[in-house]
Amino acid sequence: MAKKAKKRAGLTRKQITRSKKARREQRMIIIGLTAVSVAIAVVLGLGLYQEYLAKPASPVAVVNGVPIRTDTYQKMVRYRRLLIRNYIANLQAQKAQLDPADESSQFLTQYLQQGIDEAQRQMITLDTQVLDDLIDEELVRQEAVKSDLSVTEQEVNDAIRREVARGTGFVTAPDATSTAIAAIEATATAAFFTPTPLPTATPTLTVTEAVSPTTPTPTVPATPSPTPHVMTEGEFLERYKAMLDTLRQEVGLSEADYRRTVEADLLYSKLQDLFASRVPTREEQVHARHILVETEEEAQTVLARLEAGEDFVSLAKEFSTDESTKEDGGDLGWFPRGVMVPEFEEAAFALQPGETSDIVQTSFGYHIIQVEERDPDRELEPYLLERRRTSALSDWLEEQRQSEAVERRWSPDKVPPDVEP
Image (tube, rainbow, N blue to C red):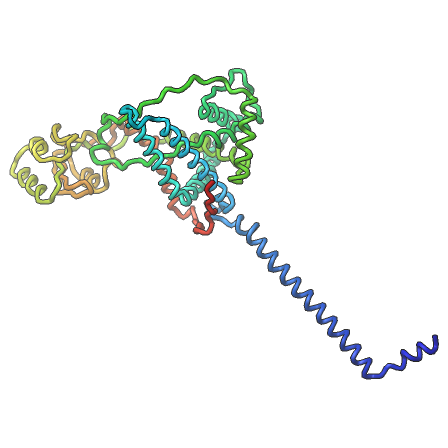
């Protein structure tokens, strides 16, 4: 033992220096590798955080300080894509059953194709439409709270049941209990088997259409429906399971997410009724006539003859291109503000009874307007009142959407990739 100790103690100074240097280099390598590992872990962690936490939580919009999350937006985009594709598939299936050689089927074929074309157009603008819809939903929720409006769980359950029964050709059993599980079953079934009918674009009213409530609208012949039978709880459950699997796998939408959309629809309906009840039934109105021509030269001719003393009614019958009013001497009847195009409205409400306007140009042509009567507080025609009530909430939402209350943070990279089945 003494010899071994003596041998170790006999290391030279150079050997000892080399040993210390080797140990220092080894420690530096270990520290360097550790630092690199930590840096890699941090980078990976930040990437994962950004991808799976920060991005989904980042808002596509902020409504009065309340953010609308990107992952919520993406789920709704995927969900609406699914609904539109189901809707198109349903129309195409109905169209395929029609005989193109049968004249009685040609109109229905054309009608179905128009629905398909409209749905495909909506798919193009879906990304921004979903954003607008989510903003509207948040605006509705906030206004509902201010107005002390709410939706109960039972109302959501009942709405889901009605939707399933309506869309699948069933009726609900008179003695069926509105249990929570049945409501959940109905939720998924409604989403998968009965896509929500797509809204159609509202045509812009012309001057004549705006004041012609009796103009007939074409009706679509209804196809006979088979006699529905009662949907049992078991049928609800079966359809629910299939739909819930599809929603989760293809859309990422949970049962709670879908129930929230049903709740939002019910809140919208309640708020719409509230806004409709606030619409005044009486407004300032004028009773006017007009002569519509295509060119300014024609309008100058008509105006000169009016100034020469000729009768407005006779000139309207002779010159006006507005076929719906010319035989009545250009009579537009009574109308309030907000019905006619802005240029026409401004000129009409600037006139007193018996006065005639100068030439007024609008997108329809050149008008000469004569006001016969004014009433500062006249009862609205039923069709106009109904139109005002119907559009009261949507008009308010449009105004709010463009206000400072809404901050948009949407960008194309927030749109989820579209993988067609």
